[in-house]
Length: 214
Image (tube, rainbow, N blue to C red; front, side):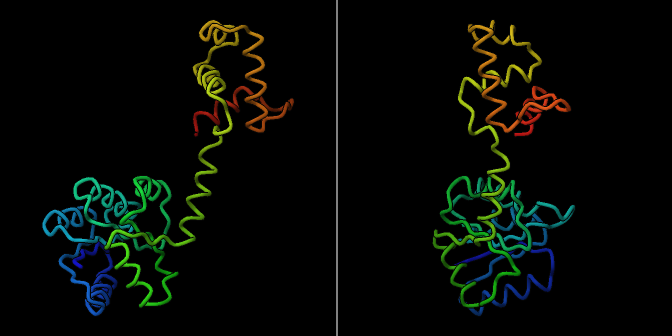
């Protein structure tokens, strides 16, 4: 198996390269940033890219964004993210295409070298290796990010028109329904979004804010 490593810490990168070599994995390229990773994959077309999340210049999510670019340019190259952090947005995007040939392990939770090398081989051969903590955080993100899942298609239409600033009458005219029907939809929206009547809150505004944030 041939691999490239993207890790901005030289000591960690060299240590990982030695570990992989001792485990029978040929390291054909190394990079210290996202652009270097993409270039290394273009040059070597490895079986596997092992990628840190936070790399120069901003040390935020460059690694994962580069991994997504690798996925687009070289879909046959498996991706193993190895990081201290779960970057939820791009991790979810990386996994959205299916978990085949994708791994996400947390450095602090890698307790056994043999198990780590097994995960490397599994991902490189088209399998998956996802740390349970990563799964838990991504599921939590999904619950947070999808407050509108319980709304019906018609309720979503009503809420979208509310977000445009339309009155009940205007919503009714647009959807060719009665104002009474619109009022029932809005009451249902408030209930499903957990927005009980309260003197200090404007539920219509809160519902629209929920829609815009989702």
